[in-house]
Image (cartoon, rainbow over all chains, first blue to last red; front, side, top):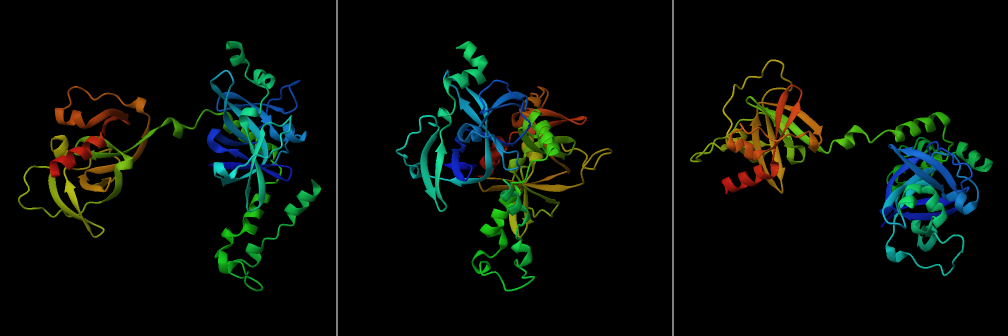
Length: 154
Length: 229
């Protein structure tokens, strides 16, 4: 499985490219006042309005820096109500991909209550890296906030 | 933060300073194994560090604009055809089937081959290929073979098509080039088309002022294979 790597400070994380639609530069975002701090905003993605979650803000409590290597990973996010929507994940140092076997990942044995999305770990020549589980990324409240139209239908 | 910015500006470009041409000093010991700086971790790490630069406002605005646009025209076109003229007819063939286009070559006729399908053998890059008549297969009338006024492309060409190792060469009057289109642009072939031609035509495409018959390459390969067995 191909993974795209990103960094949270000095730590490396991996996202399975199976759900990935496209990697987009850090475009200007339309802010959403009063939204949780890790909701970076909305952007116009080829005519669709796509919400962006800042993984740096979500995990480290500071916003991603505006650098060339900070990018938006647009994934096809499956919703709990069925169906799926594009969702942007803003992350720093998105400059590498890595092929990793699913078997290479092992459970950490540690469960951080506020970070269920940080999943299993794998190792390569440079050390350990941790997988990000996108299905555990949004709390039901945040998902309802970002995908109002779906919430209204269900 | 400041430390990071400092590192960026003190980038040691050893690939320029020493490098594969050894501009100064001793050759890099890594080169014996890596062959070229392009394969070196120092080089790729420096490249990654270049991406640690701040994203300029103007560049960011440009990105924002370009990603807000609907998908590029290229994505709306899902097919590509090689457009060529055979006598008076403009035809198109799935560009994936096309191997090569060459100038006209002499055709070595084969004795005792009946029918109007096989023209003979041609020498392409030292290999003998079977030269067939596409017009014969499609049942086209022989048109005037002079390039016409206002036509594009250049005179006589041979097109080599290939699929699953099956190769055929056929001469055409002129080749325009590749044209991208979308399935929805194809109209059904007019009923007045001769039966043989209608069978081999997947659809008709309006291109410039002419109608281009897009050929069904599956069927053409299948028929050629069957009739030449």
